[in-house]
Image 1 (cartoon, rainbow, N blue to C red):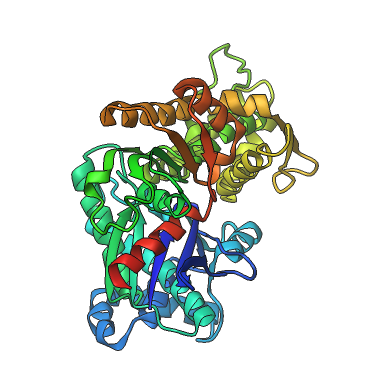
Image 2 (image 1 turned 90 degrees about the horizontal axis):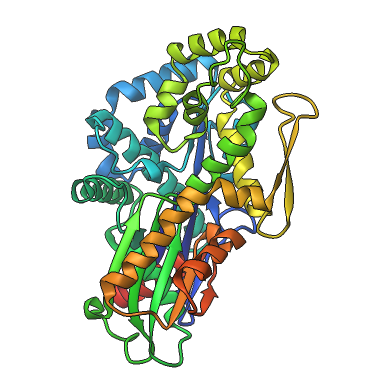
Length: 453
C-alpha cells in the first residue's frame, strides 16, 4: 500500500487514498497530526528502539554498527531497573507531557528535521539523526498500519526546497540521505520525494475548475517555501509536471523562528533580558537568544556549557534585580527552555484567534504570567516575516509573471500578521487559505498515487 508522508518540522501527518480522495489517518487518539517530538528516558534508548523495530534483513548490520550504543542502553536499563516491556520512549503529545514532568531526567528531541543538512556534522551526529528520524517514522508507520490494517510499502515524503541556507546542494544531499536511510529502516521499500510547496499545490489543484498560475506559499515549522505553478484541469493529470513549475524559492526560516523571536522579545525579559546592571553597561543578550534558539545545536550546546553558567552567576551579582537571573538560572538547570519556546508557539497560535494571550510560567515561579498582545507579536516577528515575504517576491520575479492567486498553507500561515504582510507587500492578488496542517500530506498522497497507484 502506498502513502504520502509529511515528516514535518512541527508535526507529522500521513495520508492514504480512499475512494480516490486523500485521507489523513489519525495518529494519536483523534488527532491527525503528531507533534515531531520524542522523549526517551536515556538518549541511547532511541537507538535501542530502532534496533527493536527493524526487519530481520536489516537488523544484523545495524546491531554491528551500533554495538557500543546498544551496550550502553542495556547497562542503563539494568542500572535503573527497567524491564524489557517498560515504556521508556514517548512520542508526540505524550513526549511533551513527559518532558514537562521530568525535564532534566530524560532526553527530549523536538523538530529534528530542522537540524538535517547542518554543516559541520560529524559521522556520529548524522548516524544519531538517522536513528531519531527512523524511530519517528517507525512510530508513525506502525500507528498508520494499525489504522489501515495493511502494510505501507511505498511512500512519497515531503522535502523543503532547501533544508539549510548555506551550501544548499551539499546540505540537501545530506538531509535527503538521512531521510532515505531512515525511511528504509522504518520498513518502506520504495521512497520518493516531492517538494512541499508542490505537494500543497497538488492538493489545491484537485478542486480548481479553471487553469491558473498559482503562487503556493508553504510556511512550515523550519522552512518557508514558494512555488509558482501553472495549475488546473489542463495540467493535473500529467505525470511530468516539470514544465508547469515556473519557479521555486526556499529558505530556512519558518514557524519555529516566529516562536523563537516571540520567546526572546516577549518572554525573556522576565528572566532578565534587557535588565538594569549596576555598572550601567547593557545586559548581554546572546545568553538569552542561545536559550530560546532551540533549533540550533550549537546554541543549545553553548547554553548548556559551564561558561554560560559562570557568566550567569557573574551577571547576577551585577544586576539591580538579581531575582530575574535566579529565574533564568532555574530555567537552565531544569532544562525548561524548550517549555518556554513551546509556550511562545502556543501564544502564536492563540493570537491567530484573539487579540491577547496570557502565557503561564508557573513551572518557573508560582503565579508568573506574561500577557502578549497581537501587536507585540507582529513587532516581534518582523525580521523572519520579512524574509518570508522576500521569498514570495523572488519566486514571482523568477517566474517573470504575476500569479492569479496566492495559496498559503502551513501552521503559521494562519497568523493574521503573516496574511496582512502578504497582502501589504505582494499587492492586490487574491489570497486563499488551505488546510494549514494537512495540505502537504494530502498532496503527497496524490503524487504517491500517480507514482505507485
